[in-house]
Image 1: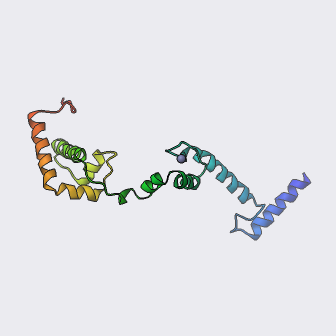
Image 2: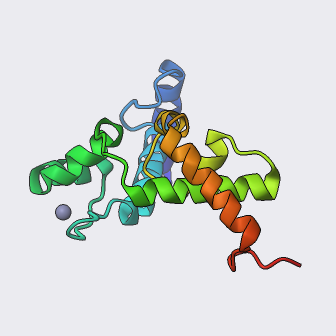
Image 3: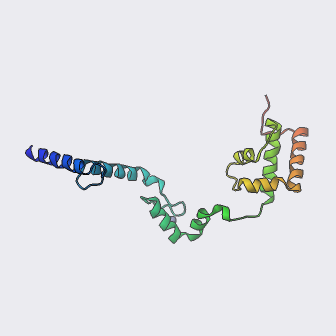
Length: 160
Ligand SMILES: [Zn+2]
C-alpha cells in the first residue's frame, strides 16, 4: 500500500519534471508506449511472410534483409519494378486493344487511366500505355476489335 503510493509519487514527479519526455525511464507514459509497440508487432507478424520461401518475419526490415540475402533477384525486381523495361508482348497489346474497344463501346470514352484500371495486374505504367496508344499498330488493333464486336457481339457481356 505504502509502496504503491511511493511509486505514484515518483511517477508524478517524473512527469512533472519532464512533461515533454514520455520516454523517461519508469514513467507511466513509457510503459503504455511499450505496450502499444508490442501489440503492433503482434498484429504485423502475419504481414511479413517471404513470398518466395514462406518464412515469417516479425518486422518488414527483417523480411527485407532476408529477401536481399536469400532471393536477390526477387528483391531487386521489387525494389525497382518500373526500371525493368520489358518489350510489349503481342498478347499484351491485343489485350489492351480489346479492353479499349470494350470501354469505348460501353462508355463511349477511354482514357489511359480507364485502361489501366480495367487491366488489373497489367504491369505497365501510365506513360507506357500512353506511348503505345500513339502507335499505329495499336490503333489498328483497336479498330479491328471494335469492328469484330459490332458484327459479332462477344459472349463476355450478356446484354439485357
Ligand atoms: Zn525467402
